[in-house]
Picture 1 (spheres, rainbow, N blue to C red):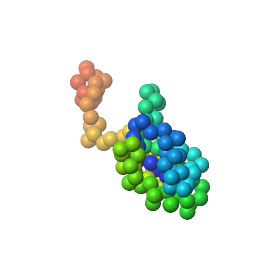
Picture 2: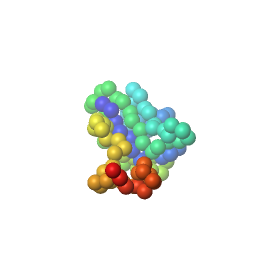
Picture 3: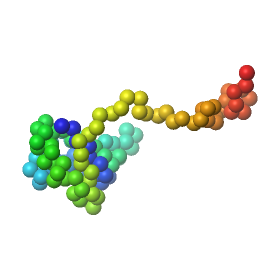
Picture 4: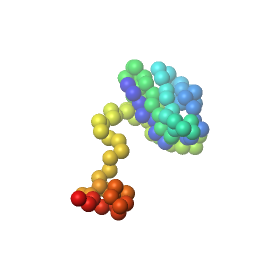
Length: 110
């Protein structure tokens, strides 16, 4: 089972999360703290993989809401990503401002 780990302290490492899971009586097969690709700093969430579903549910029960470095963690089953979920925001019938391409006015002129 893939677990979502939210509200992670920005200083938390994969080893910190494994230690917390060990206190709950489990070991994750893999743990990944999501990091900014440019700065390398934590983005405050991550994922863990535990192959045994019963053990994963035990971790959810034991660790959801638990304090780690002063922050209450969110631990639950990860939901699959939805296709086409990135980047597009409806800006109305004309699509928003910008240069517009013709005389820089931001309006379509034909």
